[in-house]
Image 1 (spheres, one colour):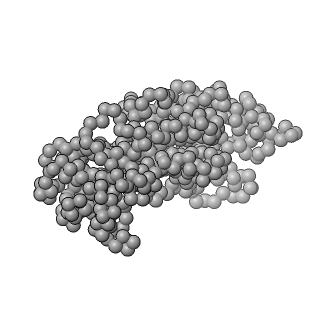
Image 2 (image 1 turned 135 degrees about the vertical axis):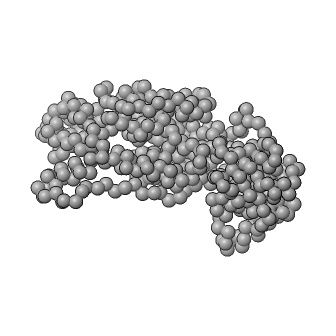
Image 3 (image 1 turned 90 degrees about the vertical axis):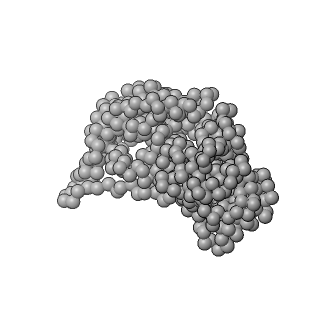
Length: 436
């Protein structure tokens, strides 16, 4: 019973090593009294400040989603692992589940329909080192995985999540308490107290089946989800009260009068804007649907698109990709940057330079903002693509849609008049096309 057993709470003389042991729920006190009665007198029921900060921040969910670049209609899937060998991440050997899942997640989940983020326990970072963690997850990060700071932004990411693939750790349990759909990729019971609520949760929560396709499992989880009441009930018996209870007890321990002003917790800040910018070659599947309508689905590989994919395919590659040999084969080359970046002279200059350097490339796209890009075609047309009302996709998607339109022999004059209507990421995006 980790944390509540005598070896953790008593000194060599059998006396408690702490003056106060903060618990969040009476059920923990009952387990403490059974496992280590000598320490029961130190127990303080003070709620859970982490849970209280999560509850207070829930109204800002959409801001947290936007900070991760999660568009309207996109689903944010959070991968969460605690820190022991039986966790989702494991201990770094070849049998760990999460590293084997990542290439499949980026292959099976369309880039513009799903955003992926990983929240790893601080002890994973400490045990393996930040450099090793980033090296292991390098390709997944370049394919669009957000690697979340384990100390500062994991709560905001959890609030923003549409679903969590996790294990028996506390963060996964917090997710379930928030009402978020949870799929357990690792579910060991051996280290959990037989009477702990988290054990019942791990025993009964839906399981990920690694041998089966992943996307249908996530979609089914989201469609069939029924929030559980037990996790929220057992996280804290005093939601919203932890700051007041803890401060009162701290001042009692010091023998100092408590201040008159209310006790407050620091609110969760809005993380800086970090949208997904895929740096690996993208397989882009398009279908023309008439009257300037184009559907676009992008996959970040490394495997081919799902077998049932229908449409024409081309390759879109970020100029700064590590797979530089793929640039010579790219149909669309793109980059994101400021329109007045002196290193590239101008978006038009950069686009002309790209087409000169890569003869196979049919269209170069310089993304200048969240809703705009400047493109140049192989025929020499220089165009500006701008998001219309309600459009909310990566402008590189707009460039791929235009490439598909022109590749099918359709005229520019029609999209000048009507614009493009792009279906991507589960939404329709009107785009205005004009000469740059």
